[in-house]
Length: 557
Image 1 (spheres, helix red, strand yellow):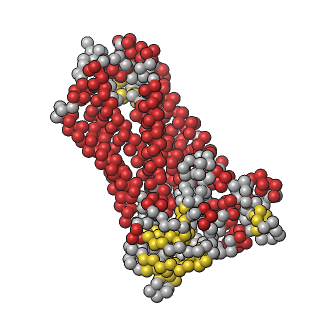
Image 2 (cartoon, rainbow, N blue to C red; image 1 turned 135 degrees about the vertical axis):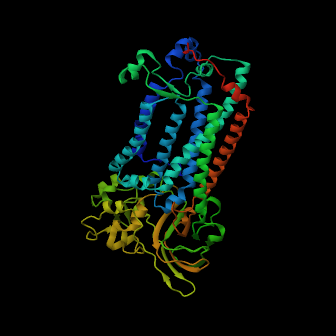
Image 3 (cartoon, rainbow, N blue to C red; image 1 turned 90 degrees about the vertical axis):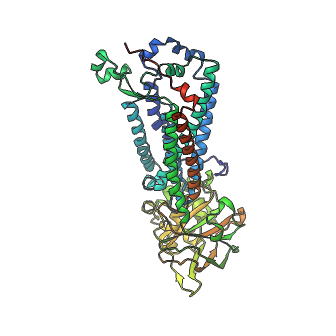
Protein backbone atom coordinates (compact mmCIF):
# COMPACT_ATOMS: atom_id res chain seq x y z
CA UNK A 1 0.00 0.00 0.00
CA UNK A 2 2.92 2.36 0.64
CA UNK A 3 4.01 1.92 -2.98
CA UNK A 4 0.65 2.20 -4.82
CA UNK A 5 -0.69 5.39 -3.22
CA UNK A 6 -3.02 3.35 -0.95
CA UNK A 7 -5.21 2.74 -4.01
CA UNK A 8 -5.84 -0.97 -3.38
CA UNK A 9 -3.85 -2.33 -6.32
CA UNK A 10 -2.83 -5.94 -5.77
CA UNK A 11 0.88 -6.73 -5.87
CA UNK A 12 0.07 -9.40 -8.47
CA UNK A 13 -2.16 -9.30 -11.53
CA UNK A 14 -5.71 -10.44 -10.64
CA UNK A 15 -5.65 -13.72 -12.57
CA UNK A 16 -2.23 -14.56 -11.13
CA UNK A 17 -3.46 -13.89 -7.60
CA UNK A 18 -6.46 -16.17 -8.13
CA UNK A 19 -4.22 -19.14 -8.96
CA UNK A 20 -2.59 -19.17 -5.53
CA UNK A 21 -5.11 -21.34 -3.68
CA UNK A 22 -5.37 -23.68 -6.65
CA UNK A 23 -1.70 -24.52 -7.07
CA UNK A 24 -0.86 -24.42 -3.35
CA UNK A 25 -3.69 -26.78 -2.40
CA UNK A 26 -1.91 -29.93 -3.63
CA UNK A 27 1.08 -29.98 -1.26
CA UNK A 28 -1.14 -28.95 1.66
CA UNK A 29 -3.57 -31.81 0.94
CA UNK A 30 -0.76 -34.36 0.80
CA UNK A 31 0.79 -32.87 3.92
CA UNK A 32 -2.51 -33.48 5.71
CA UNK A 33 -2.82 -37.00 4.30
CA UNK A 34 0.67 -38.37 4.76
CA UNK A 35 2.51 -36.41 7.43
CA UNK A 36 2.81 -38.03 10.84
CA UNK A 37 4.89 -37.48 13.93
CA UNK A 38 4.76 -41.17 14.94
CA UNK A 39 4.02 -44.34 12.98
CA UNK A 40 1.12 -46.56 14.01
CA UNK A 41 3.24 -48.88 16.16
CA UNK A 42 4.65 -45.95 18.12
CA UNK A 43 1.21 -44.42 18.47
CA UNK A 44 -0.31 -47.64 19.77
CA UNK A 45 2.53 -48.11 22.23
CA UNK A 46 2.05 -44.56 23.56
CA UNK A 47 -1.68 -43.82 23.93
CA UNK A 48 -0.92 -40.63 25.85
CA UNK A 49 -0.14 -39.05 22.48
CA UNK A 50 -3.86 -38.97 21.68
CA UNK A 51 -4.45 -36.41 24.42
CA UNK A 52 -2.49 -33.76 22.53
CA UNK A 53 -5.47 -32.48 20.53
CA UNK A 54 -7.87 -32.69 23.45
CA UNK A 55 -5.55 -30.66 25.65
CA UNK A 56 -4.77 -28.10 22.90
CA UNK A 57 -1.04 -28.65 23.20
CA UNK A 58 -0.25 -28.35 19.47
CA UNK A 59 -2.97 -25.89 18.34
CA UNK A 60 -3.40 -22.92 20.62
CA UNK A 61 -2.93 -19.17 20.82
CA UNK A 62 0.84 -19.47 21.17
CA UNK A 63 1.04 -21.69 18.07
CA UNK A 64 -1.10 -19.31 16.02
CA UNK A 65 0.96 -16.34 17.21
CA UNK A 66 4.11 -18.19 16.17
CA UNK A 67 2.73 -18.79 12.66
CA UNK A 68 1.60 -15.17 12.35
CA UNK A 69 5.09 -13.98 13.24
CA UNK A 70 6.51 -16.38 10.65
CA UNK A 71 4.12 -14.97 8.04
CA UNK A 72 5.13 -11.38 8.79
CA UNK A 73 8.81 -12.32 8.67
CA UNK A 74 8.36 -14.09 5.33
CA UNK A 75 6.53 -11.11 3.82
CA UNK A 76 9.32 -8.80 4.96
CA UNK A 77 11.95 -11.10 3.44
CA UNK A 78 10.15 -11.24 0.07
CA UNK A 79 9.68 -7.45 0.12
CA UNK A 80 13.31 -6.76 1.01
CA UNK A 81 14.76 -9.06 -1.65
CA UNK A 82 12.54 -7.92 -4.52
CA UNK A 83 12.69 -4.20 -3.66
CA UNK A 84 16.48 -4.19 -3.49
CA UNK A 85 16.60 -5.91 -6.90
CA UNK A 86 14.07 -3.56 -8.55
CA UNK A 87 16.53 -1.23 -10.31
CA UNK A 88 18.43 -4.17 -11.80
CA UNK A 89 15.14 -5.61 -13.06
CA UNK A 90 14.41 -2.25 -14.71
CA UNK A 91 17.62 -2.44 -16.73
CA UNK A 92 16.47 -5.89 -17.89
CA UNK A 93 13.10 -4.42 -18.99
CA UNK A 94 11.40 -6.42 -16.23
CA UNK A 95 10.31 -3.74 -13.75
CA UNK A 96 6.77 -3.37 -15.08
CA UNK A 97 3.83 -4.19 -12.85
CA UNK A 98 3.09 -7.54 -14.48
CA UNK A 99 6.64 -8.91 -14.64
CA UNK A 100 7.96 -7.67 -11.30
CA UNK A 101 4.73 -8.72 -9.60
CA UNK A 102 5.15 -12.18 -11.13
CA UNK A 103 8.70 -12.35 -9.75
CA UNK A 104 7.30 -11.54 -6.30
CA UNK A 105 4.61 -14.18 -6.82
CA UNK A 106 7.15 -16.87 -7.77
CA UNK A 107 9.18 -15.97 -4.67
CA UNK A 108 6.01 -16.27 -2.60
CA UNK A 109 5.04 -19.71 -3.92
CA UNK A 110 8.58 -21.08 -3.58
CA UNK A 111 8.85 -19.70 -0.04
CA UNK A 112 5.52 -21.32 0.85
CA UNK A 113 6.78 -24.62 -0.50
CA UNK A 114 9.80 -24.21 1.73
CA UNK A 115 7.52 -23.39 4.67
CA UNK A 116 5.55 -26.59 4.05
CA UNK A 117 8.76 -28.57 3.71
CA UNK A 118 9.90 -27.25 7.07
CA UNK A 119 6.61 -28.36 8.64
CA UNK A 120 6.62 -31.87 7.17
CA UNK A 121 7.98 -34.67 9.35
CA UNK A 122 7.39 -37.64 7.02
CA UNK A 123 8.62 -37.62 3.43
CA UNK A 124 7.53 -40.20 0.88
CA UNK A 125 7.42 -40.33 -2.90
CA UNK A 126 3.89 -38.89 -3.13
CA UNK A 127 4.75 -35.87 -0.98
CA UNK A 128 7.85 -35.19 -3.09
CA UNK A 129 5.77 -35.57 -6.26
CA UNK A 130 3.22 -33.08 -4.92
CA UNK A 131 5.96 -30.49 -4.46
CA UNK A 132 7.35 -31.08 -7.95
CA UNK A 133 3.90 -30.89 -9.56
CA UNK A 134 3.13 -27.69 -7.64
CA UNK A 135 6.27 -26.00 -8.99
CA UNK A 136 5.43 -27.14 -12.54
CA UNK A 137 1.81 -26.09 -12.02
CA UNK A 138 3.00 -22.62 -11.03
CA UNK A 139 4.46 -22.00 -14.48
CA UNK A 140 1.51 -23.62 -16.25
CA UNK A 141 -0.83 -21.29 -14.33
CA UNK A 142 1.29 -18.25 -15.25
CA UNK A 143 1.24 -19.29 -18.91
CA UNK A 144 -2.54 -19.58 -18.70
CA UNK A 145 -2.75 -16.08 -17.26
CA UNK A 146 -0.89 -14.89 -20.36
CA UNK A 147 -3.84 -15.99 -22.48
CA UNK A 148 -6.37 -14.37 -20.15
CA UNK A 149 -4.56 -11.03 -19.71
CA UNK A 150 -2.89 -9.42 -22.71
CA UNK A 151 -0.16 -7.66 -20.76
CA UNK A 152 0.76 -10.98 -19.09
CA UNK A 153 1.74 -12.30 -22.51
CA UNK A 154 5.49 -12.76 -22.68
CA UNK A 155 5.90 -12.38 -18.92
CA UNK A 156 6.76 -16.05 -18.32
CA UNK A 157 9.49 -15.95 -20.99
CA UNK A 158 10.94 -12.77 -19.47
CA UNK A 159 10.84 -14.25 -15.98
CA UNK A 160 12.29 -17.67 -16.75
CA UNK A 161 15.21 -16.22 -18.73
CA UNK A 162 16.17 -13.76 -15.98
CA UNK A 163 19.14 -14.95 -13.86
CA UNK A 164 18.28 -12.28 -11.28
CA UNK A 165 14.80 -13.74 -10.84
CA UNK A 166 16.24 -17.16 -10.03
CA UNK A 167 18.68 -15.60 -7.56
CA UNK A 168 15.77 -13.89 -5.78
CA UNK A 169 13.77 -17.13 -5.85
CA UNK A 170 16.64 -18.97 -4.16
CA UNK A 171 17.51 -16.17 -1.75
CA UNK A 172 14.04 -15.87 -0.19
CA UNK A 173 13.75 -19.44 1.20
CA UNK A 174 17.45 -19.48 2.11
CA UNK A 175 17.06 -16.36 4.26
CA UNK A 176 13.91 -17.83 5.77
CA UNK A 177 15.82 -21.04 6.52
CA UNK A 178 18.55 -19.15 8.37
CA UNK A 179 15.94 -17.26 10.40
CA UNK A 180 13.96 -20.45 11.11
CA UNK A 181 17.01 -22.44 12.15
CA UNK A 182 18.16 -19.69 14.49
CA UNK A 183 14.65 -19.66 15.96
CA UNK A 184 14.82 -23.46 16.17
CA UNK A 185 18.08 -23.21 18.07
CA UNK A 186 16.43 -20.92 20.59
CA UNK A 187 13.42 -23.27 20.76
CA UNK A 188 15.66 -26.25 21.53
CA UNK A 189 17.25 -24.35 24.39
CA UNK A 190 13.86 -23.30 25.76
CA UNK A 191 12.47 -26.84 25.39
CA UNK A 192 15.51 -28.22 27.17
CA UNK A 193 14.96 -25.91 30.12
CA UNK A 194 11.21 -26.54 30.11
CA UNK A 195 11.64 -30.33 30.10
CA UNK A 196 13.88 -30.07 33.12
CA UNK A 197 11.29 -27.99 34.98
CA UNK A 198 7.95 -29.45 33.80
CA UNK A 199 7.96 -32.52 31.51
CA UNK A 200 4.96 -32.88 29.19
CA UNK A 201 3.48 -35.56 26.92
CA UNK A 202 3.11 -33.83 23.57
CA UNK A 203 3.69 -35.77 20.37
CA UNK A 204 7.01 -33.98 20.05
CA UNK A 205 8.05 -35.19 23.49
CA UNK A 206 7.04 -38.75 22.67
CA UNK A 207 9.09 -38.55 19.49
CA UNK A 208 12.11 -37.52 21.55
CA UNK A 209 11.66 -40.44 23.92
CA UNK A 210 11.18 -42.98 21.11
CA UNK A 211 13.44 -41.96 18.24
CA UNK A 212 12.43 -44.98 16.11
CA UNK A 213 13.73 -44.26 12.61
CA UNK A 214 13.08 -40.56 13.12
CA UNK A 215 15.97 -39.85 10.77
CA UNK A 216 15.76 -43.01 8.69
CA UNK A 217 13.35 -45.12 6.70
CA UNK A 218 9.93 -46.01 8.09
CA UNK A 219 7.14 -48.16 6.81
CA UNK A 220 7.30 -51.73 5.45
CA UNK A 221 8.73 -52.77 8.80
CA UNK A 222 8.30 -56.50 8.48
CA UNK A 223 5.88 -59.43 8.19
CA UNK A 224 3.35 -59.51 5.39
CA UNK A 225 3.63 -55.73 4.96
CA UNK A 226 6.59 -56.29 2.68
CA UNK A 227 4.24 -57.79 0.12
CA UNK A 228 1.65 -55.02 0.25
CA UNK A 229 0.59 -53.48 -3.04
CA UNK A 230 1.14 -49.78 -3.60
CA UNK A 231 -2.55 -49.08 -2.96
CA UNK A 232 -2.49 -50.84 0.42
CA UNK A 233 0.74 -49.07 1.33
CA UNK A 234 -0.88 -45.70 0.61
CA UNK A 235 -4.11 -46.35 2.50
CA UNK A 236 -2.35 -47.93 5.49
CA UNK A 237 0.34 -45.24 5.68
CA UNK A 238 3.05 -47.82 5.00
CA UNK A 239 4.83 -46.21 2.05
CA UNK A 240 8.62 -46.23 2.40
CA UNK A 241 9.44 -42.82 3.86
CA UNK A 242 12.01 -40.74 5.63
CA UNK A 243 11.38 -38.85 8.83
CA UNK A 244 13.39 -35.96 10.12
CA UNK A 245 13.89 -34.45 13.54
CA UNK A 246 15.39 -31.09 14.32
CA UNK A 247 18.52 -31.66 16.36
CA UNK A 248 21.69 -29.74 17.05
CA UNK A 249 23.42 -31.55 14.19
CA UNK A 250 20.70 -30.80 11.63
CA UNK A 251 20.46 -27.17 12.76
CA UNK A 252 24.21 -26.61 12.49
CA UNK A 253 24.32 -28.35 9.10
CA UNK A 254 21.37 -26.33 7.84
CA UNK A 255 22.88 -23.04 9.01
CA UNK A 256 26.23 -23.81 7.39
CA UNK A 257 24.67 -24.91 4.08
CA UNK A 258 22.06 -22.13 3.81
CA UNK A 259 24.51 -19.50 5.06
CA UNK A 260 27.16 -20.65 2.60
CA UNK A 261 24.71 -20.55 -0.30
CA UNK A 262 23.65 -17.01 0.67
CA UNK A 263 27.30 -15.96 0.84
CA UNK A 264 27.87 -17.19 -2.70
CA UNK A 265 24.77 -15.45 -4.02
CA UNK A 266 25.65 -12.29 -2.10
CA UNK A 267 29.19 -12.19 -3.47
CA UNK A 268 27.82 -12.57 -7.00
CA UNK A 269 25.47 -9.63 -6.48
CA UNK A 270 28.06 -7.49 -4.72
CA UNK A 271 30.21 -7.80 -7.84
CA UNK A 272 27.53 -5.83 -9.74
CA UNK A 273 28.71 -2.71 -7.87
CA UNK A 274 31.28 -2.38 -10.66
CA UNK A 275 28.59 -1.92 -13.33
CA UNK A 276 29.41 1.50 -14.86
CA UNK A 277 26.61 4.00 -14.25
CA UNK A 278 26.02 7.71 -14.74
CA UNK A 279 22.94 9.64 -13.60
CA UNK A 280 21.89 13.18 -14.51
CA UNK A 281 18.90 14.55 -12.62
CA UNK A 282 17.39 17.54 -14.36
CA UNK A 283 14.06 18.16 -12.60
CA UNK A 284 12.88 18.33 -8.98
CA UNK A 285 14.88 18.36 -5.79
CA UNK A 286 18.13 16.39 -5.80
CA UNK A 287 17.62 12.73 -4.94
CA UNK A 288 19.25 11.38 -1.85
CA UNK A 289 19.66 7.91 -0.38
CA UNK A 290 17.45 5.15 -1.73
CA UNK A 291 16.09 7.25 -4.58
CA UNK A 292 19.50 7.71 -6.17
CA UNK A 293 20.66 4.99 -8.55
CA UNK A 294 24.24 6.16 -9.09
CA UNK A 295 26.82 6.93 -6.42
CA UNK A 296 27.73 10.49 -5.50
CA UNK A 297 30.71 10.65 -7.86
CA UNK A 298 28.50 9.39 -10.72
CA UNK A 299 25.63 11.78 -10.03
CA UNK A 300 25.03 15.19 -11.62
CA UNK A 301 22.21 17.57 -10.76
CA UNK A 302 21.08 20.58 -12.83
CA UNK A 303 17.53 21.85 -12.90
CA UNK A 304 15.95 22.26 -16.32
CA UNK A 305 12.77 24.35 -16.61
CA UNK A 306 9.75 22.52 -18.01
CA UNK A 307 9.09 23.36 -21.65
CA UNK A 308 12.71 24.33 -22.33
CA UNK A 309 15.85 22.77 -23.78
CA UNK A 310 18.90 22.54 -21.56
CA UNK A 311 22.53 21.60 -22.08
CA UNK A 312 24.03 19.69 -19.18
CA UNK A 313 27.67 18.61 -19.01
CA UNK A 314 28.57 15.59 -16.93
CA UNK A 315 31.53 13.27 -16.54
CA UNK A 316 31.45 9.49 -16.95
CA UNK A 317 33.53 8.00 -14.16
CA UNK A 318 34.19 4.50 -15.54
CA UNK A 319 34.75 3.25 -19.06
CA UNK A 320 31.58 2.14 -20.81
CA UNK A 321 31.69 -0.15 -23.82
CA UNK A 322 28.68 -0.48 -26.06
CA UNK A 323 25.94 -1.42 -25.88
CA UNK A 324 25.16 1.20 -23.25
CA UNK A 325 21.56 1.40 -22.04
CA UNK A 326 19.91 4.82 -21.88
CA UNK A 327 17.13 4.98 -19.29
CA UNK A 328 14.93 7.67 -17.83
CA UNK A 329 13.47 7.83 -14.36
CA UNK A 330 10.32 9.63 -13.21
CA UNK A 331 9.87 9.53 -9.46
CA UNK A 332 7.42 9.44 -7.79
CA UNK A 333 4.92 8.50 -10.49
CA UNK A 334 2.27 6.03 -9.40
CA UNK A 335 1.65 4.16 -12.60
CA UNK A 336 0.61 1.23 -10.39
CA UNK A 337 -2.25 3.17 -8.79
CA UNK A 338 -5.58 1.44 -9.32
CA UNK A 339 -7.20 4.18 -11.42
CA UNK A 340 -4.13 4.46 -13.64
CA UNK A 341 -3.95 0.69 -14.13
CA UNK A 342 -7.64 0.43 -15.05
CA UNK A 343 -7.71 3.53 -17.24
CA UNK A 344 -7.19 2.10 -20.69
CA UNK A 345 -8.77 0.02 -23.44
CA UNK A 346 -6.88 -3.08 -24.55
CA UNK A 347 -9.20 -3.48 -27.52
CA UNK A 348 -8.33 0.03 -28.75
CA UNK A 349 -4.58 -0.49 -28.68
CA UNK A 350 -5.14 -3.84 -30.40
CA UNK A 351 -6.59 -1.95 -33.37
CA UNK A 352 -10.32 -1.63 -32.68
CA UNK A 353 -11.54 1.93 -33.19
CA UNK A 354 -14.82 1.55 -31.32
CA UNK A 355 -17.40 4.14 -30.39
CA UNK A 356 -17.20 6.87 -27.78
CA UNK A 357 -19.64 4.89 -25.60
CA UNK A 358 -17.36 1.86 -25.76
CA UNK A 359 -14.38 4.03 -24.86
CA UNK A 360 -16.25 5.46 -21.86
CA UNK A 361 -17.08 1.95 -20.68
CA UNK A 362 -13.48 0.78 -21.03
CA UNK A 363 -11.56 3.83 -19.83
CA UNK A 364 -11.82 5.33 -16.40
CA UNK A 365 -10.64 8.78 -17.49
CA UNK A 366 -8.77 10.76 -20.16
CA UNK A 367 -11.38 10.48 -22.91
CA UNK A 368 -11.34 13.97 -24.41
CA UNK A 369 -8.98 16.90 -24.84
CA UNK A 370 -9.91 20.33 -26.27
CA UNK A 371 -13.26 18.90 -27.36
CA UNK A 372 -11.66 16.12 -29.37
CA UNK A 373 -11.77 12.44 -28.62
CA UNK A 374 -8.47 10.95 -27.47
CA UNK A 375 -7.30 7.79 -29.15
CA UNK A 376 -6.29 5.58 -27.54
CA UNK A 377 -8.14 6.60 -24.41
CA UNK A 378 -6.85 6.20 -20.88
CA UNK A 379 -4.24 7.71 -18.60
CA UNK A 380 -1.34 5.68 -19.99
CA UNK A 381 -1.87 7.10 -23.47
CA UNK A 382 -2.60 10.60 -22.14
CA UNK A 383 0.58 10.74 -20.04
CA UNK A 384 3.13 9.40 -22.52
CA UNK A 385 6.68 10.39 -21.58
CA UNK A 386 7.84 12.85 -24.23
CA UNK A 387 11.18 14.23 -23.05
CA UNK A 388 13.91 14.06 -25.68
CA UNK A 389 17.64 13.43 -25.33
CA UNK A 390 20.64 14.24 -27.49
CA UNK A 391 24.17 13.32 -26.49
CA UNK A 392 27.53 14.49 -27.80
CA UNK A 393 31.15 14.40 -26.74
CA UNK A 394 32.26 17.70 -25.18
CA UNK A 395 35.81 17.48 -26.51
CA UNK A 396 34.97 17.40 -30.24
CA UNK A 397 31.20 18.07 -30.22
CA UNK A 398 30.69 14.79 -32.04
CA UNK A 399 27.16 13.46 -31.71
CA UNK A 400 26.59 10.08 -30.06
CA UNK A 401 23.79 8.18 -31.74
CA UNK A 402 21.10 6.83 -29.43
CA UNK A 403 19.20 3.99 -31.08
CA UNK A 404 15.53 4.22 -30.11
CA UNK A 405 14.55 0.79 -31.42
CA UNK A 406 14.94 -2.59 -29.74
CA UNK A 407 13.79 -1.16 -26.41
CA UNK A 408 10.32 -2.75 -26.23
CA UNK A 409 9.24 -6.36 -25.90
CA UNK A 410 8.81 -8.04 -29.27
CA UNK A 411 5.68 -9.75 -27.94
CA UNK A 412 4.12 -6.33 -27.23
CA UNK A 413 4.88 -5.00 -30.69
CA UNK A 414 3.03 -7.97 -32.19
CA UNK A 415 -0.32 -7.31 -30.50
CA UNK A 416 -0.23 -3.50 -30.55
CA UNK A 417 -1.99 -2.27 -33.71
CA UNK A 418 -3.47 0.89 -35.17
CA UNK A 419 -7.07 0.86 -36.44
CA UNK A 420 -7.94 1.03 -40.13
CA UNK A 421 -9.20 4.56 -39.51
CA UNK A 422 -5.79 5.70 -38.28
CA UNK A 423 -5.07 9.35 -39.30
CA UNK A 424 -8.21 9.41 -41.49
CA UNK A 425 -10.91 10.33 -38.96
CA UNK A 426 -11.59 13.95 -38.07
CA UNK A 427 -11.86 15.31 -34.51
CA UNK A 428 -9.55 12.64 -33.16
CA UNK A 429 -6.42 13.55 -31.25
CA UNK A 430 -4.06 10.76 -32.17
CA UNK A 431 -0.90 10.17 -30.18
CA UNK A 432 1.33 12.07 -32.61
CA UNK A 433 -0.86 15.19 -32.29
CA UNK A 434 -0.42 15.24 -28.54
CA UNK A 435 3.25 14.28 -28.45
CA UNK A 436 4.92 15.62 -31.59
CA UNK A 437 8.36 15.50 -29.93
CA UNK A 438 8.57 11.69 -30.12
CA UNK A 439 10.36 10.50 -33.25
CA UNK A 440 8.37 8.40 -35.75
CA UNK A 441 5.25 8.49 -33.56
CA UNK A 442 3.01 9.65 -36.45
CA UNK A 443 4.16 6.77 -38.62
CA UNK A 444 4.15 4.10 -35.90
CA UNK A 445 1.16 5.08 -33.78
CA UNK A 446 0.72 2.66 -30.88
CA UNK A 447 3.40 0.42 -32.40
CA UNK A 448 5.98 3.06 -31.52
CA UNK A 449 8.43 1.49 -29.12
CA UNK A 450 8.38 4.42 -26.70
CA UNK A 451 4.63 3.94 -26.35
CA UNK A 452 5.03 0.16 -25.96
CA UNK A 453 7.53 0.70 -23.14
CA UNK A 454 5.30 3.28 -21.42
CA UNK A 455 2.21 1.10 -21.87
CA UNK A 456 3.72 -1.39 -19.40
CA UNK A 457 3.09 0.47 -16.13
CA UNK A 458 5.95 0.55 -13.65
CA UNK A 459 5.58 -1.68 -10.59
CA UNK A 460 6.83 0.98 -8.17
CA UNK A 461 6.58 4.78 -8.02
CA UNK A 462 10.09 5.00 -9.47
CA UNK A 463 9.24 4.59 -13.16
CA UNK A 464 12.61 3.48 -14.52
CA UNK A 465 12.31 2.72 -18.24
CA UNK A 466 14.53 2.12 -21.25
CA UNK A 467 14.73 5.02 -23.74
CA UNK A 468 17.47 3.90 -26.14
CA UNK A 469 20.75 2.05 -26.71
CA UNK A 470 24.21 3.44 -27.51
CA UNK A 471 26.59 1.18 -29.42
CA UNK A 472 29.65 3.43 -29.14
CA UNK A 473 32.25 3.33 -26.39
CA UNK A 474 32.69 6.06 -23.78
CA UNK A 475 36.11 6.46 -22.15
CA UNK A 476 36.63 6.68 -18.41
CA UNK A 477 36.57 10.30 -17.24
CA UNK A 478 35.16 11.56 -20.56
CA UNK A 479 32.88 14.58 -20.45
CA UNK A 480 29.59 14.42 -22.33
CA UNK A 481 27.01 17.09 -23.08
CA UNK A 482 23.37 16.13 -22.71
CA UNK A 483 20.71 18.20 -24.46
CA UNK A 484 17.36 17.65 -22.77
CA UNK A 485 13.99 18.61 -24.19
CA UNK A 486 12.11 18.82 -20.87
CA UNK A 487 8.49 18.36 -21.97
CA UNK A 488 7.04 15.87 -19.47
CA UNK A 489 5.47 17.85 -16.58
CA UNK A 490 6.43 16.82 -13.03
CA UNK A 491 6.18 20.10 -11.11
CA UNK A 492 2.51 19.45 -10.33
CA UNK A 493 3.37 16.48 -8.12
CA UNK A 494 6.87 17.52 -6.99
CA UNK A 495 8.42 14.88 -9.18
CA UNK A 496 11.99 14.23 -10.24
CA UNK A 497 13.34 13.26 -13.65
CA UNK A 498 16.69 11.66 -14.41
CA UNK A 499 18.70 10.56 -17.43
CA UNK A 500 20.84 7.45 -16.93
CA UNK A 501 23.62 5.65 -18.73
CA UNK A 502 24.16 2.05 -17.60
CA UNK A 503 26.45 -0.59 -19.03
CA UNK A 504 24.22 -3.61 -18.63
CA UNK A 505 25.86 -6.46 -16.77
CA UNK A 506 25.02 -10.16 -16.62
CA UNK A 507 22.34 -9.46 -14.01
CA UNK A 508 21.22 -6.13 -15.43
CA UNK A 509 22.08 -3.06 -13.40
CA UNK A 510 23.46 -2.83 -9.90
CA UNK A 511 22.04 -5.08 -7.20
CA UNK A 512 24.95 -4.80 -4.77
CA UNK A 513 22.67 -3.55 -1.97
CA UNK A 514 20.86 -6.88 -2.14
CA UNK A 515 24.23 -8.60 -2.27
CA UNK A 516 25.34 -6.91 0.97
CA UNK A 517 22.09 -8.01 2.65
CA UNK A 518 22.50 -11.63 1.51
CA UNK A 519 26.18 -11.69 2.48
CA UNK A 520 25.37 -10.36 5.96
CA UNK A 521 22.60 -12.88 6.63
CA UNK A 522 24.62 -15.72 5.13
CA UNK A 523 27.73 -14.83 7.11
CA UNK A 524 25.83 -14.67 10.41
CA UNK A 525 24.11 -17.99 9.69
CA UNK A 526 27.32 -19.74 8.70
CA UNK A 527 29.30 -18.49 11.70
CA UNK A 528 26.59 -19.52 14.16
CA UNK A 529 26.27 -22.88 12.42
CA UNK A 530 29.98 -23.53 12.87
CA UNK A 531 29.77 -22.48 16.54
CA UNK A 532 26.85 -24.85 17.15
CA UNK A 533 28.65 -27.68 15.36
CA UNK A 534 31.83 -27.19 17.42
CA UNK A 535 29.79 -27.04 20.62
CA UNK A 536 28.00 -30.25 19.65
CA UNK A 537 31.16 -32.15 18.69
CA UNK A 538 33.02 -31.12 21.83
CA UNK A 539 30.06 -32.04 24.03
CA UNK A 540 29.75 -28.49 25.34
CA UNK A 541 26.11 -28.12 24.34
CA UNK A 542 23.81 -29.25 27.10
CA UNK A 543 20.89 -28.96 24.72
CA UNK A 544 22.54 -31.46 22.40
CA UNK A 545 22.92 -34.02 25.16
CA UNK A 546 19.32 -33.69 26.23
CA UNK A 547 18.04 -33.59 22.67
CA UNK A 548 19.62 -36.84 21.50
CA UNK A 549 19.27 -39.51 24.22
CA UNK A 550 19.87 -43.13 23.33
CA UNK A 551 16.86 -45.40 23.69
CA UNK A 552 16.24 -48.97 22.63
CA UNK A 553 13.72 -49.36 19.82
CA UNK A 554 10.39 -50.84 20.98
CA UNK A 555 10.39 -53.04 17.88
CA UNK A 556 13.58 -54.83 18.83
CA UNK A 557 13.23 -58.26 20.50
